[in-house]
Length: 474
Ligand SMILES: *[C@@H]1O[C@H](CO)[C@@H](O)[C@H](O)[C@H]1NC(C)=O
Ligand SMILES: *[C@@H]1O[C@H](CO)[C@@H](O)[C@H](O)[C@H]1NC(C)=O
Ligand SMILES: *[C@@H]1O[C@H](CO)[C@@H](O)[C@H](O)[C@H]1NC(C)=O
Ligand SMILES: *[C@@H]1O[C@H](CO)[C@@H](O)[C@H](O)[C@H]1NC(C)=O
Image 1 (cartoon, protein in one colour):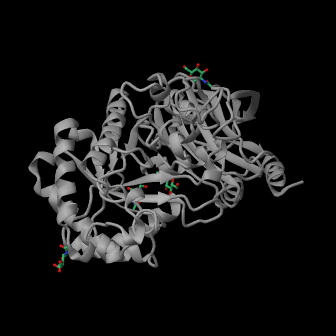
Image 2 (cartoon, protein in one colour; image 1 turned 30 degrees about the vertical axis):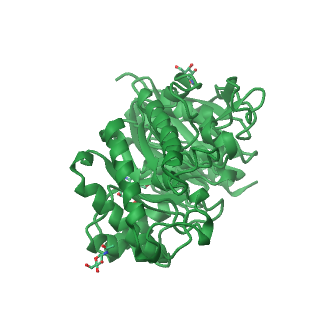
Image 3 (cartoon, protein in one colour; image 1 turned 120 degrees about the horizontal axis):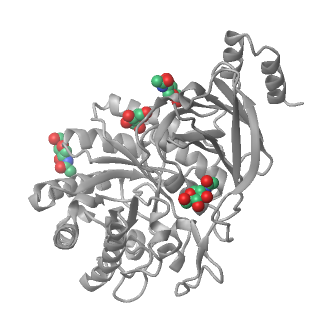
């Protein structure tokens, strides 16, 4: 018998002793908490977005319902990895910049057509993938920014002429610390470029409605991250703090520094140390490739929602699949690598985001992830049902969700709550998954101390879960 079954047996025995029960639950490292008494505003599906993943034409070949059914909030593009003549970016020439801008604009139009905001990758329009590495052309080489300034002016003109700026964010540069792919010069040269760009954008009154974001550093924020500690104090002293602080959290399964619960504190401490203002945090790349299964997606959604953090999924696909397939939420029945094929189908993550974006209505409730960090939960209380999304992030074991404050859903002490469990069983970003989760049946729980404890037997590490029960009319 494992520790948790022992605990559950113990709870059954001493159910009448409120203090003991509460204390025992709070110390269970594999228990997450959902509290129906504390609501946190309407769901805005803050984690429903991804980078790239949208075909380069408008109207695009993916029917709108695939976007709207998951409450798609944010998209991002810039023409990365396009390699044809005329599509390689500013470093090759104006015509090649125009090809990348055409891709960017098509993605922007798709996002707006389905109600999402758009973020643009300036480094892609520059063309870091064709910049020629160390021997090539980078902004501010030999302290000469004249060519880069021309690029920024061209992009500012094109953005202002073609986009609804209230729904656009200019991400000033992507992953300056992921060398040699996105930057090959010093951190200080990047900071100089960042400050210069921010000043040019903010001096341009035509762009007042547009947001900026940065620093989009690849490694997690912390006191020992030299990119953060070089950038932040200078952004403060030059009055160039962006509208969104952007982070990338793709460190992998066991690394606790790539966890919004951790970075909420570590970034908070950096901001305090350097006297930087609070801004909305935007994780504009989340989830490592191995986390792109239902248990991982549900965990990330829960973590981001807890801190009111906006999020876009990272994208681990390449070639044409980078410009298709929603970062791996979609696949194709025949061949996902065939760009022209339109037989789109849900991959493992799509049903999770559809449930999150469509079914989880009402008000968000307060949650706490398990102390061992593997399980997290997101919950909404509607007029019809209480719904909980749960993810044991690519891990197995016996976990539990303690649902507290059941009186808020009309359940008295001693009454019975019938909980229906659903599993999200998709296994990969390639295989076709059923769009609806599997109904795993109903279990009845007796309310004690205004709470019930739902046990998760996580035998397959990829499985994600949803739990539903009726909200009783007052
Ligand atoms: C930032 O401010 C410092 C101190 O005022 C100044 O020396 C530096 O040149 C500024 N950096 C840029 C890129 O403008
Ligand atoms: C930390 O989370 C709180 C909400 O829980 C949020 O208001 C705050 O902006 C977050 N701070 C950082 C630096 O992530
Ligand atoms: C989620 O909502 C859709 C659309 O209303 C519905 O068809 C589906 O049955 C719901 N899923 C669950 C698990 O309730
Ligand atoms: C909400 O949950 C957090 C932990 O995730 C906890 O620190 C906080 O006290 C809770 N808020 C209320 C009002 O219970």
